[in-house]
View 1 (cartoon, rainbow, N blue to C red):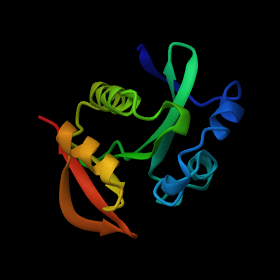
View 2 (view 1 turned 135 degrees about the vertical axis):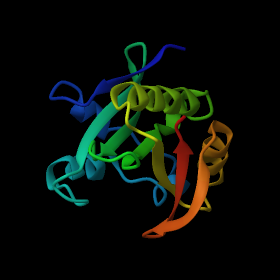
View 3 (view 1 turned 90 degrees about the horizontal axis):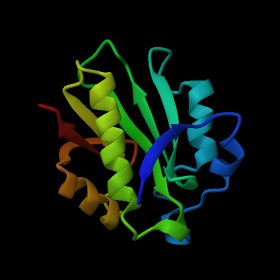
View 4 (view 1 turned 180 degrees about the vertical axis):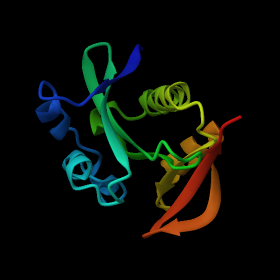
Length: 153
């Protein structure tokens, strides 16, 4: 497995749009189209920058993940829109991609003291992944999702 992130561009956005989760996960993860729309619409404010990535194993696109941040802060570094295509779930891509994203964020933003994400509490697989990676629930809720945080040392 050789998992790496590549920005979503004119060259791969249509392939990214074809990524789909399992039927029972549809309500737990925004579609790639919704995530890409956020880049333009900026629903969380003009100060937030959105960076969409396709997740690859060598040259095979297996998923999508997006980073949203406000570089003037120490705690507004978010992972969102994270999904592995249904065809590739259960093969370790989620853990590898999460590791790549955390590594990318912490290398690019040395002032980052925590990384946040949201997750539906009934998304047991995602909660287990995040917990095993060191994310902790904050007790805060954003919409209908719980906010989790990964402290960065």
